[in-house]
Image (tube, rainbow, N blue to C red):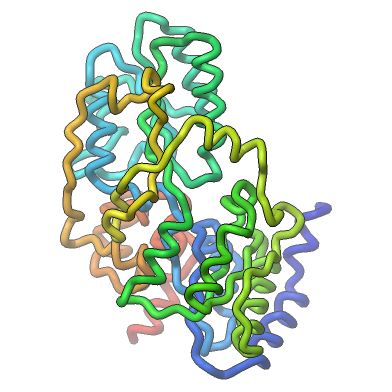
Length: 370
């Protein structure tokens, strides 16, 4: 298939891995920020190709994984209110709150529906004018433009029974929190691809400028990821620290202007937003501007708004920070599986735990612990 097979050629992958090994034997820790990269690394066996001195650290780039328990509970609280149709993407249905999840709320009688886009939720609102329709908006700058455009459309069409429970987050404050964390010492970053198609590569320039760490924004095919790792390692060996763009076929320096305009029109930064595992990060979340308050579910409905600690058995927070690997969690693969997830890292399609579990890492883990 054109434009796919070109990025999955095994002989080129092995050459890239050999080049990485030839560059240095120095132990290096490189974080792939995006959950999509984590899955590519495991699905295509990239970790097995890399030399032993290169350690890939899984970052907080899975938006479902970083939603704290309290925000899940708030979602369930809204869904259970009379007259509400609560809509969400499929991967949020089974994310555990402190006691239950949205799928269980649906079984208890809540009208919870899976949608593929916020526009689907707006359509449901138009079809059910006597009901309140709420869309659970989440994700980085990748998905924020679609939510913003839907709110603009709802305002234009004067759809008064539609609102958004906003959990959109931004990537730059999260990166800064990772770099400031004393728990984690990193040598470089494989930068997120999807987010960068919207915001461009310029926002990452603070990483080499202020922290002296290289960044290579990467695509999602195996050769993309390997080339990005090569670019990061080469920068380190050559004593450079800059932002390189491996994903030039989709990402530009300035990003997508029209998408950014929609975000800036509808949203503004929250003072603080809580991230699972990372705590509260200043200006890392988005909220609706006051001119669109009529579409803000947090103002339309009464929600608990409680901060709830993660279950002690689940070490999702440490995994999101890259401090621990999924297989180091005591419940991984036993009490916590994709069928019975305890943490969001296992239930999300982009979660590191799900990647380890689904792509055959259990045999390798067993070998390490033997």
